[in-house]
Amino acid sequence: MSRVNGDGRSGFTLIEVIIAIVILSVVLLGLAGTVGKLGVEVKNTTDRTRAIQLAESRVTEIELTPEYDSLADWYAGTESNVDSTDYTRITRILQRGGTGSSATMNHKVITVEVTGNGLTPPVTRTTVVGAP
Image (cartoon, rainbow, N blue to C red; front, side, top):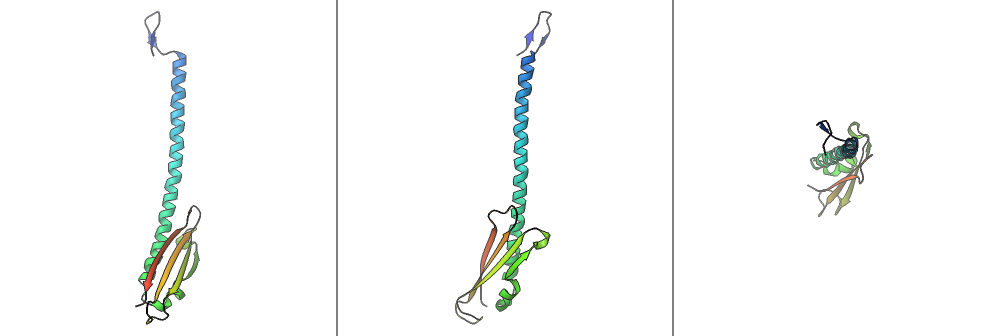
């Protein structure tokens, strides 16, 4: 609210200027907090995306392996610092049905779990590979 003083000049009172500065400060502090939270969420999303890529690449690699009987020997186990990250990748291979590649209903359930800082819950991918 501007006022006209006795000599014809207009302007804001000191209290109006102080109130405007306080309101502007509150808005800017709220905006700064939101930007900080956004940065954390972007990092969490980036970390989760990288973990998903690590899990899915292992599943794809196993699915493309032609040596069915050797899958557990080659892939089952725990890897630390996968692809120079601080993630741990655990690959579990469970035999289901009969044994040997000629048995009826023979298949393997492959579960890949990626864990690490900031991954709550861990990233898990599961697939089933049938005997040829």
